[in-house]
Image (tube, rainbow, N blue to C red; front, side, top):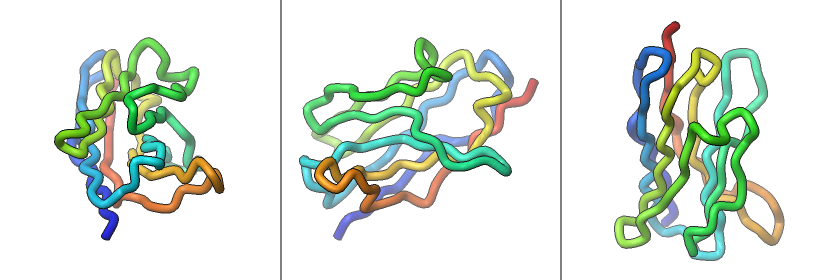
Length: 118
């Protein structure tokens, strides 16, 4: 059974840092693990993506140089280190498993909320 569980969200001041974790169990190594976010009133957007090999395949322009995606395969966990946070980073953050063949998100976590105060 596939399960994705995000943790690590919270309230932080602008300029601060948070690290999100996605515990991914039962996910085939063929999947790309992604982080997406959805701000209030906006569509969900891809933030970062990483292959099972650890190769990072994507960062959104808005987070380049501030966010780092990584993974620990021994722990089946993917991380999103978020530094120099800005109020516009406020959103619900989701971990999702992307099927590279169909280019569809087959599995989703429940999300974790990140709020950045100015």
